[in-house]
Image (cartoon, rainbow, N blue to C red; front, top):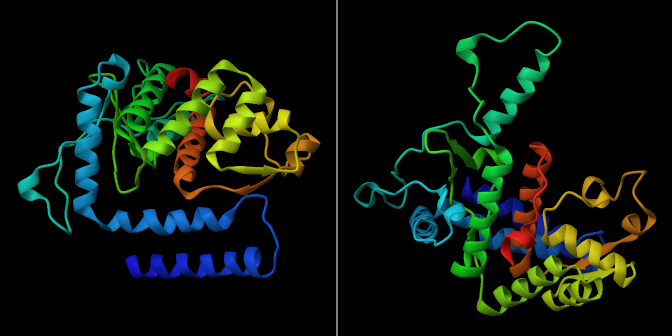
Length: 292
């Protein structure tokens, strides 16, 4: 599987290099840098020793956090004597994943017009408070990125567990983690402070400083692009639109993210996944306000 994945990535990078560098054609987003970052990250999915190390490092950071919210995000604990290069043994986090909860909510909507699912099949979601839990998750990501300098890079609903008895968020599958150098953390911190303050010119300048190159728009809309890339708040109309949406403003259709530094991409990816969680659970939380 690893060899197949590496060949697939090599082929995609070859094609992106052909299109972007040899033919001079441009996608709306810098595909080549993104693919190169995936080439660096994906092999870690097969490095179980590294995965255990990251799980323990991040788990320890969250357990020792002075923030009560971050402390409500938990990780499994490895059993070292039963771990090796091809196997990880860890404690089990009891509870449904957020993906299962979304499926259950969809199923209940299907029954809203009449009928009822079998009681034995239902998840008891009476005490599930997504806004509260996602707020804790945001704070925990601030701890990972800005305090520890390493973060879990794949917070999709299947990797989040509602630990119902303790009302905590469980974070699982540490195969995609990203370590940041001090310079990148500093640039991200400045971006976060600027986003929280709301000064659009400063936000645009901070975006430039990260190395993300946005073309085709004025500085004012560049601040909107920065907000979408580095914050998960949902109160922007553009946060609900695709550039290909016929209702998208002209500036959004014209925007081109020409360059995305490899070190910054995984943070942008995490923010996009967090925004997806906000949309799925009808929540509106700001990463910049949680992290400033």
